[in-house]
Length: 162
Image (cartoon, rainbow, N blue to C red; front, side, top):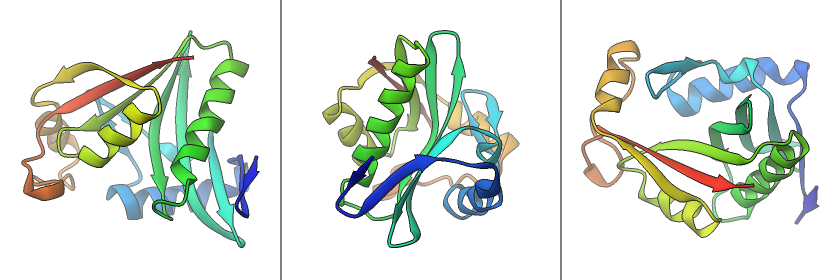
């Protein structure tokens, strides 16, 4: 996939150290704690968006029967179509794997992400009050206050039919 000088490609084995470093920079640690579980994005499949020889975005995912779950997604170049390109790569991968839906989790403060995902066909599917508070017990790096000064407490799931 290419658009506006951006190439999206699968994460390769030699990318794993970079994925771990990037996850630590963006998520505060090499692991992501979500819905009472732990993921290590550097061990997961994913896609990297590159522009001019540098990483412009990254998405990692996990697959279980019929479901592709986005674990992390970050567009380092904001408002440049990178996030959309990564979602399109995920849709194609979900179809290729025969998944019936794509799921992801965000937090109650992440208003920009809620807008972004819903505009791309995702629907709100679950609310887990206090889930971030529980995750903070396992990963104390999670801040207590999120975007816009909103207390960071809850997880919100979104789902998109493939």
